[in-house]
Length: 185
Length: 211
Image (tube, rainbow over all chains, first blue to last red; front, side):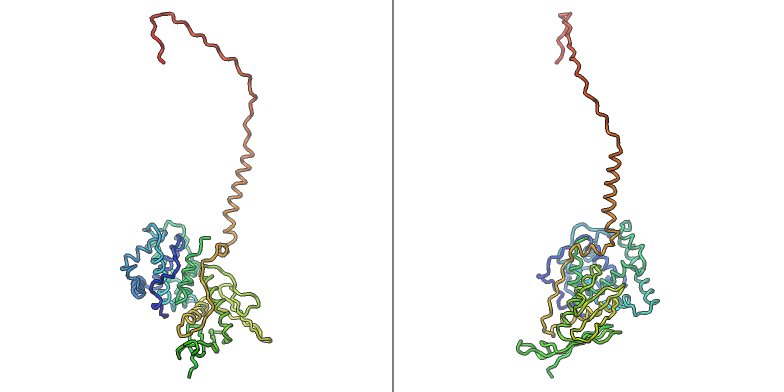
């Protein structure tokens, strides 16, 4: 696993990254994908928060959960926007988690793995992600219904896993931040 | 032994760089300030090696390509005769390498998503390694312009809304034309105003009308 702790402290030179509605949805969905890949993902996120020195921003799991509830697709959503510091912290936590889960992401994306095994792995991730979405998201939203109706290895889930794989590691933070700041087409 | 060698390993890719410290720039003995060679091994493909400019060309194509993929944009990077070109090929990616030396045929390497991720992680690791004190080309990651993002939406989906809107306007216009116009009545000559004659008060005891 690549060590990203050295550059974890909030950097004042980082541009103000205030995310729009779609980007908040995407960021939270990526964190949810991390939780579906790692059964202990919630705890691991807290550990990553401490490792990166973000205890002042997210002192406990409730504060972390409250920030994630800015996703408009949540069942209990919160109004307003994430501040630039909170956004940066969530992006860095996500990249550390992706780095930690990289071997699993690699297995899912590799075409060299046995097909049956890959299909079973995707099915497992799909089922866990479905359960998490049904538990936490507003099921009346069209985006959620589309997601729940998708195939285990469909383009939506593959793009989530691919995003995590390409955002893992030291160079992933800048790439993911820029990608989240894309305008809505 | 002043020659230094550093290796960046991933499951399917291994990047190795060799070089010397540049003492004139104040580098430590463990640093690489002058790159003498590099090698890239990708599982299932020939070993690649070259000069520093080839490695920089690889970085300048692979890292922005990955940035595009993060936004869901599927587009090739690099021109036809460039030393490095990365082209989407179905669910995979084709890395085209053209040698500058005559007589060497171009090489194509097929990468799946996992191999692409491994390759970019190797390049990221090299760029962020403090022991390798080389000025790599700057790669700034910016939000993509809207026109690039529009391409990821299928043409039929993009055209649905304007076509539906245009069709609605046409249908409403045709319906409006079918509606009968109201008949225009010719103006009638104005009637002479009636002259009201007030009845005189018959009874002087009658009270005045209220205003």
